[in-house]
Length: 212
Image (tube, rainbow, N blue to C red; front, side, top):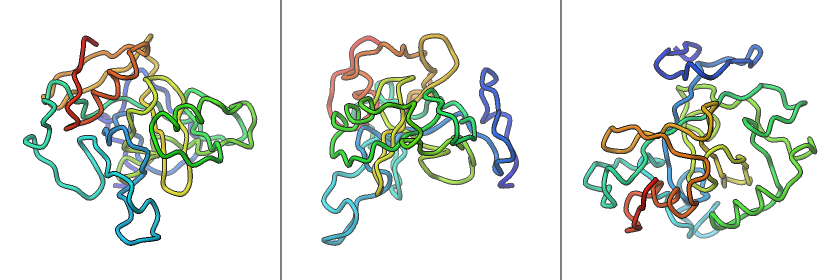
């Protein structure tokens, strides 16, 4: 089961070039919101990310949510979007699909975006993970969920321990397909205002979403 790729989880526009990486492939990832936490915040003083706000998306770590919890409105909140498969090779920098390690520890979405964009992605010392999109069976930031921190088709960065800025991307010209919580699908431009993209990523923050 772990190794099986389900056709419905694969975008026909993407190409699998990962050599001998075990696990079923996945192009459709769930939205965990605009926070930098890669998981739930610590619950005891001194634990990792203690005191940080919980994820504010629709599909979050270890919390069961219903449509009643999406108070921003199901048609104003993204549930899932696209993510390209990685190249499977940490010896080559592929900014469109790799994730990178700036070596910093941002506390906010703005800090994460700034620090992620500041690094030289051609420098392999910043290389993170290239096996992106594998496996679909495991809930993690490498295969099943992303954030609304950077706009579509921007970079992805990780900030150990347990902070992340995963970004939606695709091979479609100019943007990504996103499924809203009401089940409708919209094509979202890579040039969308970051304030609107982030508003679409939260379920109960009360932001006003304009045209997108």
